[in-house]
Length: 354
Image (tube, rainbow, N blue to C red; front, side):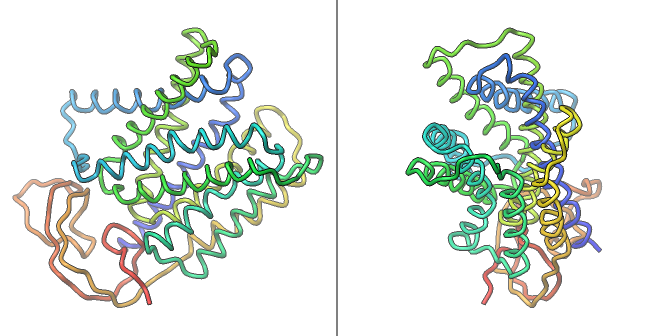
């Protein structure tokens, strides 16, 4: 069934995005001994932006047909808002918060991005979240907190800790604004985010007089950024178009577990109690999301838009000349319709619920 296969594909994209991002943390540790944090972040993001744009250029030169809708003028405010919130303001808030907050407190609070994404999706963007989704989100967020719990760390509240919460909220804004344009080319969206965030961090590093690494180390960091940031963000946007912001954010919140598991292998870290306690919570939350089913009678208003689509999903019945690719993108019109079937909060099912 197309709905079932589509849900599985989008869910796998979110999980792979989490895996790539989570794996980037221990791999970046190999470079962190020789590169300071701000220039390292700059190189990782610049690697994702430059690398993705280069890949698009190579594909265009090779004559590969474009099957994704391009960024239109109407999309620019959403893209600019997402990039500003997640790539510029959130890192500033995080760095300021980490400077004056107890480390253990900050580690726990950094798990709130998924919750912030879901809350904004439900309240501001009217994305439907049932009890099953909220329970899954609570389990995964709780698992992240259990994983980052430091028994010997000092837990305490400091006003600066609110800046860490603000950073998570800003990443939640980024995720929800990105959802609004997720029907457009995810590689372009990820590339723009990488270039802007990387350029901002690089300017910050240069303004502070932070030394930059050598050419070889810089290239390695950029290559890592292309995979762990660039490919991850692009897959995250792909998942957004089919699952919505809350569910994609919840599945992406499994990233720390991949990073921790890889650290256990790479650095021969000891298997600790936090990981063993968090793993079943994370698995239960992910299982709830993957097993979610949602169907009811709903109405579609007339709509005109441009996005990648195919004609066996029950929502695209316009005609084409012979030879059109199975999946393609172009502007098209949907007439009003009313029907009942299983669906997710994808491009065509962002209706309200009673």
